[in-house]
Image 1 (cartoon, rainbow, N blue to C red):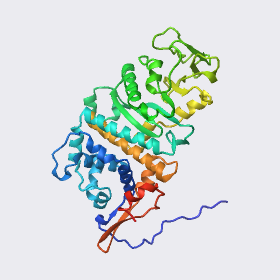
Image 2 (image 1 turned 180 degrees about the horizontal axis):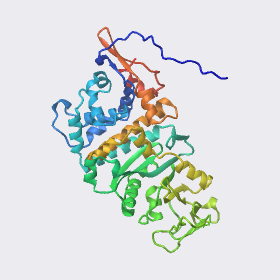
Image 3 (image 1 turned 90 degrees about the vertical axis):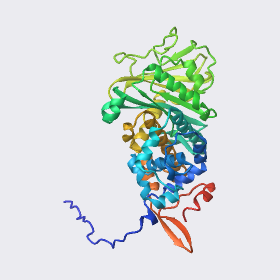
Image 4 (image 1 turned 45 degrees about the vertical axis):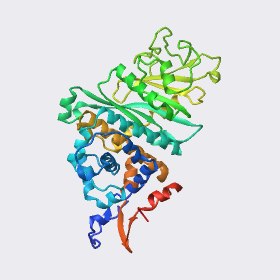
Length: 442
């Protein structure tokens, strides 16, 4: 008979000693994130943008830089509320290490968010997209979600996905303002990064179409020199395929819009002006089948431009939905393999929300919520880049916070010189990081 060994807690506790909080921080790994921000020249870019100011003398002349940095670093250490962001006031060593002279209280942070406008939210989204463009170039792997794959022939995954919240999940105050049943955050991800996001309440087909087109027109330069795969939950009727191919930068279609060859037994309306694809209903024999369309050519190998693949299936709620994938037509992967790669893993937007616990900010109103989520997107992208540059592991962002950020640092004073000692294993950072980190840790 197998007997479990007796496992008991050690009753003999080691001696306990307290250290002045000004000489110790539990989040010493944020120094690497600050080094990455300076490497990207992020703070100078922030100061070049116009943001509304709030009256707060102690935050200095670079108030927007200070507030954005405070919220960003709070999110990056696992904080999910403004109250937690305000707690940075009680971590003086951390403030020194990340270059903040003063931290704002919760009221000031909330006031700053509430004063943001559509223009300043666009500035935050633009800042985030700029960093993604640089980080895509720096990253050694591309892909979507946690299943990063080695960069192959310049391939890059581009996806439009959305996160919806039922109003029952939103605070009562926000619920009154929305006066609707569903809140939607529609996003564009490029590789493992969240590039952009737009908010709407119960979006219709026209809204989705406009948001998708804005994403692709604004950010196509990020993948212009790559071999992109574009996937989305639907291609709205208002966005014809020709337009989608053009604004996506997926190569020129050499055939007229009506000249397609359809394979895999798919229903295809050659005469419709906008909605070319007629997908099967749930009871039809074509349900859950893959349908592929190419510009006309004598063989697949000679087809120019891109191939459009579609599939109708059931989502997690048992509701039939369409999924589309634009892929370089020369790809050798089967539709099944392509769909598994792009739709069979957790979408980046869901990683952002879950890893950073972004549920409290739903209680914020309009532009305040949009501003917070734009800063959270930036925090997620910086943590992802940190993982790719330093960790070299297939970690989630939540694991990056636990494994790198939440590592203690202690202040050591010798010969009138202060040094912050990092208690983790020093990562093998890129050569040009030496001078960025050197003043902060030894």
